[in-house]
Amino acid sequence: PVLRKLAAVCPSLLASWGVEAPYGMLSKLDMALDSFDDQYVGCAAAMTAALPRLNLTEFQANKVYADGWAEASRKWRERWARGPARLATLPAGFRDEHGVALLAYTDKSPLYREFNSAVRQGGRSRAHYLQHFSFKTLHFLLTEALQLLRRDQQQSRCHQVFRGVKDLSFRPAGPGATVRLRGFASSSLKKDVAQKFGEDTFFSIWTCLGIPIQDYSVFPEQAEVLIPPSETFQVINASRPEQGPVHIYLRALGKHSKYNCEYIKGEEDTPVQKAPSPIHKPSANTGPSPLGPCDT
Image (cartoon, rainbow, N blue to C red):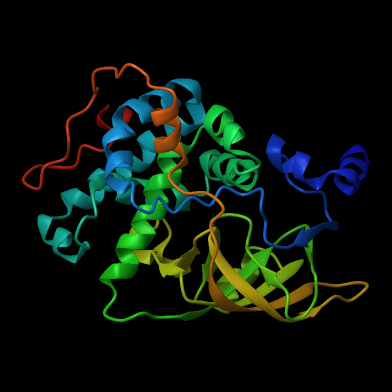
């Protein structure tokens, strides 16, 4: 009862605490302007250079993050061990840490829940991101991984996907409204797979920025398509019965980012002394050495 009352007054507060929404909770489906949506346009190289020091700091502050990353790194090494021929399928610029980031995200571990919750609130302000968002490395690597995979496609492709949500009913503004999905959004090419994740709200989505990641997923059989926080959609239709599941139909419109290169701007505003790097960069001729405690 307490959670229901709190959810009615301030649903975003529950998300910031990492608390699952109570059954039947209503949430607005809008442009999700509190989510952190940086696309790192023009600063990818600078972010990559900052990763070793940044990631070490984040690991020290968050055991769930450190443990989740280490487990994903172990799984990535197992895939590497199957043979170097697999690397031929990786797009240009795709590094070990991109693969580890995708495995960590798709593992549906406590890291997955904490990260999604943080992303949904991470864009409340630039100051909030710089001071309190503790997944800067993972956000960058997931964003860049999707960008690299998209560039590697033979042609720009859109996908019909499905997304099931349990214990949460979204309330869109109505047909024609422009919305985003509040953060990185997992969906599936298979309707029956999406239905297993919940049907209190069920999305049918035509996405043009979502990328199939089943080759990089812990659960390839789910045929996952990962949609970035920046993609915008038009609400085509939404059924909102008094009882029963909500069905929402979305069509890709484009993309919108409120933020860009915020960490690099923050470094320029407040210079800090660089600590010695605890890692070495991956080599194309050796096994993977992803960031931080992955090598342990």
